[in-house]
Image (cartoon, rainbow, N blue to C red; front, side, top):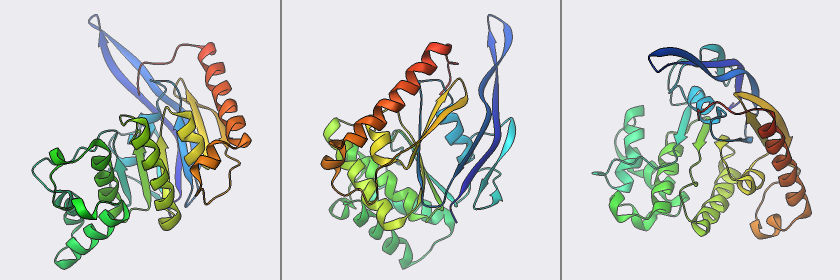
Length: 265
């Protein structure tokens, strides 16, 4: 139901440098299938094209070449079959947490008591029942990200797209939200495509890690850790965790030696 397919995706930008036009290639020949219910992590150096790929899947950017299919249907622009969580929550500051979650539902056409019932359900899922009436300035960074996750989940998308959603948080909050995301995934089985620079995060959350460089997929690493991943501390101490992380690290550093990456993210 939530399968995502990127078929020969390419993306080129026109830039003017010193009054001369240049063509910059952000993505080239990207082919990837994300299975229904799978968590796939995209990682790579800054400028390798991972966020551009995510934005193309969401419909925020148009590919120069290729197609994106979600649940077998070709995408054209944004749609309610996809929800996105950004690096910063991007909440509407004049709305409460509940109203921010309701906003996406209203855009989808939901009306009446279902609005609050659905918003409250997803706020409970992310542990914010007691903060439903707070405005963003009254929330911590981690709480804002939880509202962003609830807002994306509330529209019941087939696919959840996450662009470094925990990257700006302190280590303790980040680890708490990683564990919470694992719990949410176990309950919802949503397909998730997640951009990260954090290799520990990539191994902990993902079923596969896609290592990117210079706008291409360099390697796809399977994560040999079973689900559900309940005891996060035990997982981090597992020898398989360390071995898999090191394999991804080697892939990233081998790619860095090959060439300089394009300055795009």
